[in-house]
Amino acid sequence: MKHAAPASEAGPITAIWQTVFTYILITLVGFNLRSVLLGVPPVLPLIQHDLGLSYTSTGFLTALPVLVLAVGAWPSGLLAERIGARLSVSIGLGLLATGTLLRAFRLSIPSLFFFTLILSIGITMSQTAMPVLIRRWYPKQIGLVSALFSDGLILGEAVAAGITVLIMVRFLGSDDWTGTFVFWGIPIVVLFALWLLLAPPGPAKTTRPRVSRQHATAKSLAAKSPDKRKRVNALHLGILVGGGSLIYFGMNAWIASYNQALHQSYITPAALLALNAAQLPVSIGVTFVAQHIAGRRLPFIIACIISAIAIVGWIFTHAELQPLWAALLGGSGALVFTLGIALPPLLASPLEVGRLAGITLSLTYGVAFVGPFIGGALWDHFNVPALAFVPVVVASILLIVLGALLPSRSSFGIQPR
Image 1 (spheres, rainbow, N blue to C red):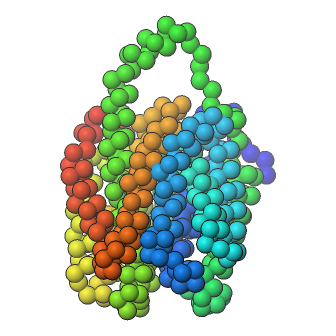
Image 2 (cartoon, helix red, strand yellow):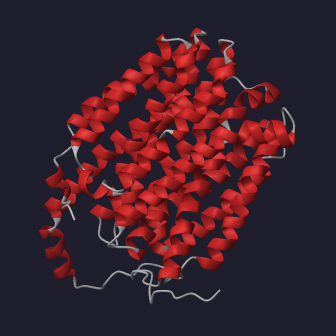
Image 3 (cartoon, rainbow, N blue to C red):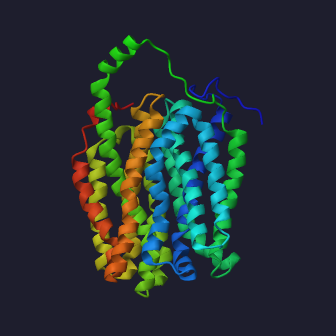
């Protein structure tokens, strides 16, 4: 198919048909970056049983992609600036497809972790590069397109969490968890081909203007204060959004195993579906007002208070109420995530989006990594299932404070449109 592409990756896309295709591709990238991850928790008890994993190892398996995002997002942002964000996404999707399909071969525990590492690197490269493309392809529609990408991420989470077990039982076999890896890997292969064919082309790398040493020094001194302020805000925001991600990944990691330990697995599909499905209406709703509420304290504070109430309710009320609490946790987490994901392309210049996005994602997922891992370790040590959710409780309370201390909207330099 012939492209009506921009002259360079830095220019906006104007052709309507190309814009529609690109919107769809961006959303599909988000979908596939999460479907492969959230298809695992529903079958995690089967994996744990068949491979003889401890609760600590099980927690590490679910936390490994988060760890890779934490460690690799910053260098991935720099790589996207050097080789081009489109190529970074292409490589990332290729690694994601490879790792997802190859880990379906039940060779050994090390192979499962190795191929999970490969697909996690692919997710990291693709997710970090997407804000760069959004900033360069749609500089006047950053809020909308960032929300579409976020919608894809959340839709992938909800669909994978909700239908993986149903697909396995109906079409693959009651305990064929490896077949679910293949099921979620095939769409990535299709997306990889579509991305190579339909994604607008761009230059191989981002070029920076050459300036004299004196001019560069003067420019650096003049911009020192605002740049430093932005980095402080990114640090604060990264930890804040990371706490929200810790809540989300911690709940996804342990709902199935927790309910199995308490002999109430009948409620697990409904709870996982509620946790993930509740995110989508929130994300879509935020899409229309993101430019007006981005950087404000109140949405973060409200989301964190809701999370704190919901996790207490989850632990101390009857199992039948789990879908309610899970929906509140999922919706509040989506609010924090959707508002946070748009800030790097809004705050940074076109040449700095990759770095700012990488720093923010590294902080976000660095904080989120500790949740499932520490939760599993506490469960192993004390043999109390509810202790798996201690990091979620701590994060919910901490985020109320971090939300209240978020710098004022004006310090972000965001103006309503």
